[in-house]
Each structure stands twice: as C-alpha cells, then as structure tokens.
Length: 292
Image (tube, rainbow, N blue to C red; front, side):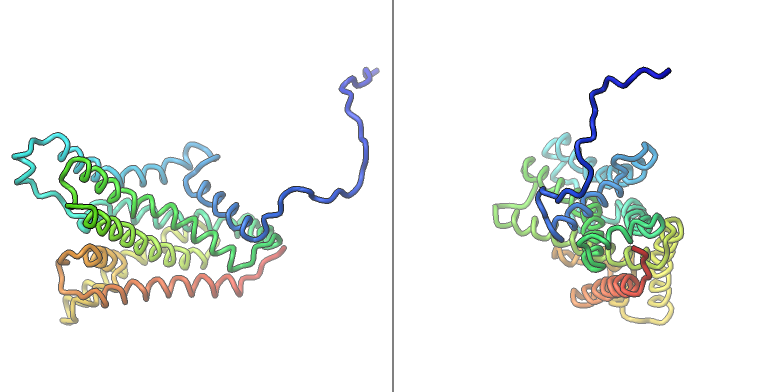
C-alpha cells in the first residue's frame, strides 16, 4: 500500500487568472526576439558544437588587429617609422574568409530554423507582425556581423591612439571613429539584407548557407570576368559582393582604391544589393503561409 504524500502540496483554486505583470507590448516582443536570435546565432545556451563556428569566425576576425597592435607595441620607434602599417580600409581583405563564412552562417541560423520548427507561427500569434519579426531578426544578424565589421578596426584605433601612432588630435580621432563605425555598419547592413533575402527562400539552413556562398562567389567572379573581357568601366566592380563592399570601405576612409571607382558608383552597387535582399525577404514573408 502506498504511503500518503507528506509534501503538503494542495490545489487551492482552479480557474483563469489575469496576467498582472508588466506588459511591454510589441517593443518588448521585438527586444526579446532580438536577444534570443543573437543567442542562437552565437550558440549560447546550446551545445558546445553550436558555439565553435560563430566564436571561431569572430575570433579569427580579430587576429590581424592583434598582430598589428603587437607590432606597434613591441617594435622600437625607429622600426615603426619605416614600418608601413595597414590602413583601416585595408583591414577587411585580411578577414575576407571569416567574414564570408559568418555571413553565410548567421542568417540561415536565425531565420530558417523558425520556419522549419513551426516557431514562426507562435511568434506571429504574439504582438509581433511579419514586419516587426523581420526587424528583430535583421537587428540580430546586424548585431553579430558588427562584431566583425566594426569591432576589429575599432580595437586598432584605440590601441593606436594609446600607443601614439593613431590620428593626430581629437578631431582626427573623431573623424576616424565615425568612418570606422560608418563603414562597418554599411558592410553589416549590406550582408544582413542579402543573407536574409537568400535565407527567406528556403527553410533548410544548409541550402541557405550554400546558396549564400555561391551567390557571393559567382557574382564576384562574373563581374570580374565581365569587366576584364568586355572593357566595362571599373565602376562595375561595385556589383561584386566581395570586391564592391571593400572598395566602398576604402572610399569611406578617404583612401585610394586599387581600381578606378567613384564613391557614388560604389554606394550605388551596395545600395542595389541591399535593396534587392530586403525586398526579396519582405515579399517572401508577406506571401508565406503560416499556421498559427
């Protein structure tokens, strides 16, 4: 015979009770979804294997900055005078592989998973609309990408200023800071829009990742071959998803790019890709059938 329970637990009431906590509305829902999406993208609260790729890509993007800072800190002044340090606009080709990898990985992770698991319908049953859902997801992807596009050059600026080899005077430091943040955000917004556009077309992360890598490589190869074989102006390099953004970064920093391209042309190519990705993503989610 089973001994009677001694836990002291009792059912006091059964029925509906109104929620008495704070109601944060749509803004709170967007913030919560943004935070959860950033955590998922970085593998937080998940297995160790889920953390390896995002953290490795972010850490690799800082390696060149640490090397340059180490040279400045360890080399004597007479050697620093003849050492040609990379400019802020030259930094991104050093981390091209890490940036391409994290761009192809992050958006599929935060976007495709919700459709495949059915979580999208649950989110849309909350105060979130389709547009506010996409805003939260885009903000999450941009946050993670900014760790790579803004963080390393910003670290270089701080270290150079502390070592006395940075920009001269507060005005130059402020201008360089604005250029670093502006260039990093331009790259982040571009790759966020394009990767979300690609990821919106499938609910399989592997397909979206492969498609993003192919789009990046094929567009760059196609534009490069087209310019070389047809004699088109170098300004068409702005349509390359690899070369175009990096050329724009150099122009933002006031540096001379390796090809003859103007700032309006570089901005136009970046804006075209950004707009295309954003439109594809939004249209796809407006017509997507969701079961709530």
